Length: 297
Length: 320
Image 1 (spheres, rainbow over the protein chains, first blue to last red):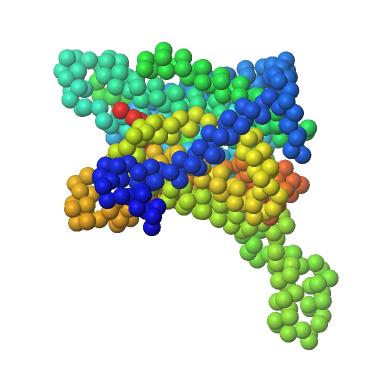
Image 2: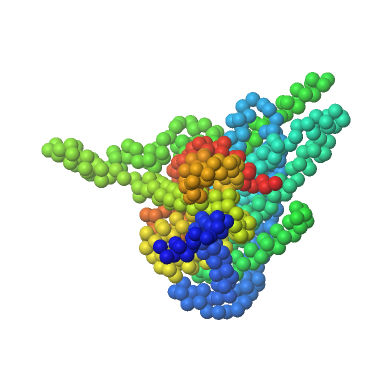
């Protein structure tokens, strides 16, 4: 009772009460996000300077974890793989999303059905579609080998495309494009539908062709949406784990590399933490450049 | 001449649409087709099985498995002992009925469902109040909170995995099944919370403020306004957010694979599927059937909320 009085004295005006209540409502969400996202991130940075033992004793080793990571050629391989993966999946999903959105913005029979079918790869669980993809590229029974080797005779013998790291990264990229282009498509389509139709009519009166209309009207209208999509895609794919790891263990992007380092074999949690810190710094610097140069914020 | 050109164009357009549909659906068709094929049919590149094989589904869903699993000795025993009552016979059969040792689909399904449902429900409830707070109320620090919620998008699972694993091991939560299960619920809740906050916040802003003002004049407080007015008005959006969170939790593998490692009876469907794939029981029809059964609930849920979800997603990502 006393506390209630102190919290809500009769003199407390509506504005102040509103302020307190606003904080009360957001507090649970805030506490959870602070304690389970923000705190762990700082804790991760802390751990990266320690030799982390599973029995609970951490010993401070300065920059040794970072040295261990930076002088490991596997780490640099996985940096290269990650960049390859991020660049091509981002270009692929955005480009494919754009083309499909442009097509779906036209009217044709059964459009409603096609529009909802397109979203299926995006909503289906990763774990349930990876096996179908693995089967497609299966060296013995897969349809890819059947077409390229048996029917078209492109290769001298059957081989396991997902089995070799060099080739598997391209399968992983293709898979990611297939899985994620619907998201880009959806964003672009909803922006397309918001463009004022009068603009096109005016351009037609001026004698503009399809390409000119796209260049002068559609593309400028889409520029910022696409900029945002590319940004989100870079962030998400840079951190991507499941879509790569579940499809093939041979493509070691940074997340997968960290996973193996930290949770298999000798469980180098400290080194894993160091990689995660490096990965995050790379992402941040990349984003800062991107936001400045492309989005011009 | 002009007509011919436009005819060619529309034909090209149709081919393009068909190509997209084919590209999108092919892996799903492949999955369905393989789940229905007999082993001798695997090498056949055609997507239509020569003979439909429902064995994999029956096995996973535990249909008609009793007779098949009975060892011959038991079959003989049942046949040659006429004085057994029907109840006794059924009891004996029931002991062999369970095919759970290969892939206990229902158990994994149950685990996945409880995890995803609880996490999505809590995340939804917390998000309703949080989103209302920062989309409708005026106070200092509001926009900072709103922006930092978006900032959370930047952190991938892997940077949180190591510290969270460490924290929960230290707290001793990961040594018991119950603790592990609760930990995962909390983690899934956190992962879906930012998205839920964001989507609900966007929706609440579309509700006309005059409705709330009228309610305030009637003497309703903020809390009653949320419960009696905002929630009923945004049921569709709340449902959408709930299902979106449910899907995220249902599909999660990274945290489950580390936290649930030691507790086989807590495995979620993704964990179970991966374990099946790497086990000696891995055969294509079984894996594909299990994949189908994992995907179907999610796809069905998606169909329910498709319209709201697609507009919710595009409003969440496109800020103007």
